[in-house]
Length: 150
Image 1: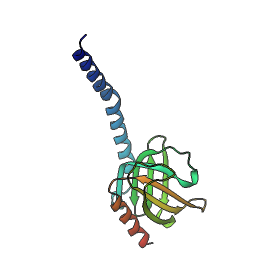
Image 2: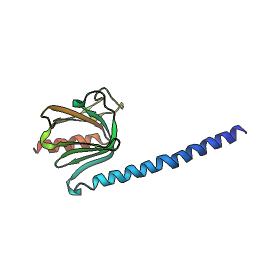
Image 3: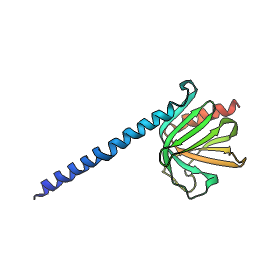
């Protein structure tokens, strides 16, 4: 078998794996994100991002895995729905203290700025959570607008 045939077989194998695993996963996550977004009144959604990367809640400690999911900013607050494992973080606007931009959170980074929200958690304790999102300036200004109207 020539090197050309080996390369062709390798390329076809990669394409087959992509078609069998990655495409169905993308379809599944897209359906899941649509289902999540349908829970909200479209008029109440200020911003949403289907591929937000959560860096964890400070109160839960350093040993947390990052997770992707849907981040939704509504007039009522900030909501994160993680895909795998399925979990939700809800931060009502009345619990938010501040919003800022940081380079890392809980010793984790993606070498890009992160959205960090400081708030009072359900136990009445100060807490912080951070996400990687695109259009970071829009997220910060959207949350600041809500905070100024509290």
